[in-house]
Image (cartoon, rainbow, N blue to C red; front, side, top):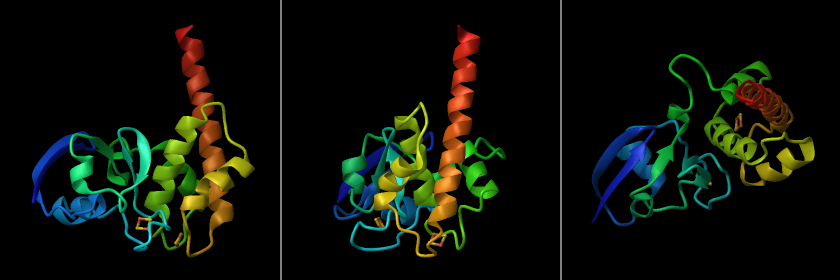
Length: 166
Ligand code: FES
Ligand code: FES
C-alpha cells in the first residue's frame, strides 16, 4: 500500500491506495471525480488527460503514488464557478462534442496545447497535437474549429492584458 497526498483542483487530498492504483482510478474511485474518463486500456484514447504540475498527462499511465506531491488539474477544476473556461465555451459554441465521452480529455489536452503556443495555433498543428486523443464519434472537424477559436480568443485576451500592463 502507498500513502499519497496531492493537490487536486486546489484542494489538498490524501489517502492510502494499493501500489498499483492508477491516477485515473484514484481520481474517479477514491475522490469521486468522474469527469476524467477511461476509454481504453492501452494508453491510446486520451479520454483520461489531466494536468500534472501544469502539463497534460494521460492519468491512466501514471500511478497515484507517482503523482503524490503534485498539483493535479482535472476538467472539474477548469471553470471559474458558473463561468466556463474559454476552451469549454468554444467547444460549446462550435459543437466540439457529440456524445461527450472524449471531451474532458480533448479539453485538457487543448488547454495545454494553447498554453504551449501562446501566439496562436494553426489547423495542422492542432491536428498533429491531437494525435493522442481519439474521438469515437469522429467529431474532429468541430473539435479542431473549437480549439482554433479558443486559441484566438485567449491570444487576444493575453495581448490585451500585456497592453494594459505596458
Ligand atoms: Fe488513458 Fe485511454 S484511458 S489513454
Ligand atoms: Fe463522442 Fe468524441 S464526442 S467520442
